[in-house]
Image 1 (cartoon, rainbow, N blue to C red):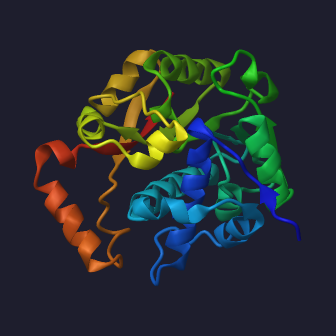
Image 2 (image 1 turned 120 degrees about the horizontal axis):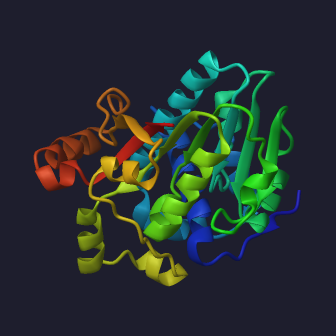
Length: 273
């Protein structure tokens, strides 16, 4: 089977990076996420993934983040038989195959048209699943999504690459589109921005990847819309999910936890609306 050529720059490259990190996790002796489709995607794409090796330790954070959000989606679907799942900035994630929604659920993966076109070729169809090629910062992208059902919305690895005014606009539009639901995503704090300024990530500079949103606290997001309420905050250092990870990484998370600034360097918040 012919390989699919990929020549991304900018934020699109993060779809490849996240896929690479899920693939590394799947190859670990004790994977956190265990994405069984990552290998087939890596094999099909004509791209030099070896250049991501300097960031390979990120597989643990991506594994924890994705596993936490998967669990939240499954819990929401279990109590909401007619729910919509909306994954914005879905990239090359095959999350629908990990979560396996029920017959009454509808799932929409939204990303740039060129990304969802390739994702569709990589994974093929899935019952109740639809790809939507659109930028979430452009008007009208929600028109393709039914707004008469409760929804759980995921923005895994997306919002930190948008300016705050776009984050506010995207989240407000989602809250107003659906009657009720939940929103889950990851955020990075200002301490990481300071670290990036002191020690830029060479690969980000190479591809023109720019992080823009660094909120100081998960509750800051509640100001974006009066219906948004923080329900829970997941931890990137979740001891349960990391219990069988390599010793060096578990020790690293313990050390990070001893420093207040770094202990709160990133969160996985879930909101209700």
